[in-house]
Length: 326
Image (cartoon, rainbow, N blue to C red; front, side):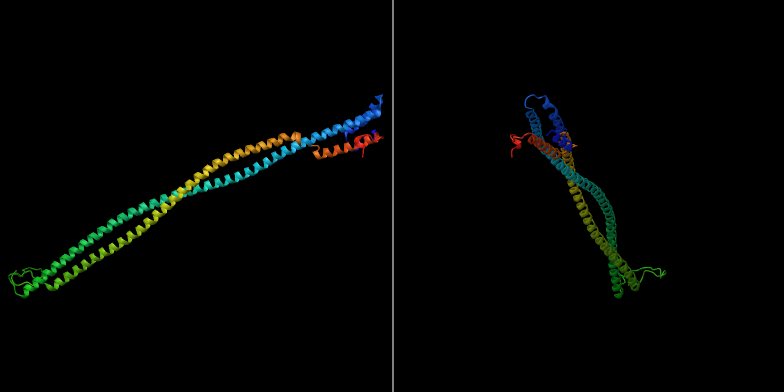
């Protein structure tokens, strides 16, 4: 039995079986009473030791599987959370940069629109003043010319009537450049032909004043209408961009708050991840055997128990040992 156990110990590379085989060969000689029973007790002792070791390792494996399983799940969970939070923070950083850039652009655009509107308003004011001045002067010229024409027409009509009636007392005596030697006697009917030329000329001047007033007024009305449209469009654009800038600022504030909260969450998650990694590291010495896995140790122990059973049953010729009973 000892020799068979020794061979099996060599096959399994089991120091425990080899040690037992050596004790089986030496120690029974020093036992005076029942050497066979002494050998059986040695075999049973190692069997009990192996069974106790199996129970402890099973308990230890259960603990390690549970503890490492929880720590591994915690690590994976925190890794997923960290990746998700990092992606969210990256998106928020991009959103923040875009909002800041857009607001700077909106700020410049609003400033340019206000500047352009102010310049256009100044130009329109100056242009309107000039147009109104021209219209006023043209109307004044029109009225003055009209009055002059009416006066001349009345004068020459009156003179013509008096000349026809030979009303010498009422005739107008004039000395003209054409008749320098003429006196002031005689009936004067006015130079009707020349008068018509003067009146026609004045009528042209009057019409020019009227046309100028009308044309300038049309230009003023058109310019005022165009400026009103420009002003409305500018104010609409300014209001729209100002509102958009305000909305962006609110969105930017939300993004800043989310960034702050996200960074805190990420730090907490990283701390929990570090904790899970430390737990796994702490469990390695007692739960991770770099030489043999639990399954390998279990298989070897079962082979050792089988070898011990074979040795016990070889010694148990009477078949009284419990492990040898079929």
